[in-house]
Length: 183
Image (cartoon, rainbow, N blue to C red; front, side, top):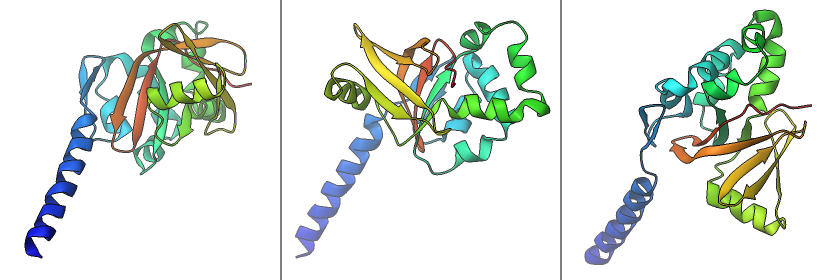
């Protein structure tokens, strides 16, 4: 009986370890993104996401993104924010624009842990398009452009996922080349 119990424990431990290592450390913005850290603790180390991190702090969303989740975050790079009209980011991080900033940032968050393969499966089931409800109540559409995962926002603009499946302890990040905009 003890031998059976030890065998079961060994199998469970192997499965748990295999799952943990399957979610490998990914480099983003010159920094390792560890699957054992939360979204915020990883994002603050990416030199490509300093604008996003500053915006998350200005919107007061740090504690939310450090919570249990799970969340899928579509994370625009600094270069993505640079595509916005001049002065947009500086205006959005002002205290009087916190509501607008929060609306934009939460439009980049979907409840649950959606890997790229999960999204691709949803796209296949949806005959080429998958619809996701965002944390701000809006909608995003995912589709494939060849082998590239592309998102379309409510304004009809698209953003390509440039780095996929950056797993965190409370979700997953997919890096974007363009900021998504809600209606």
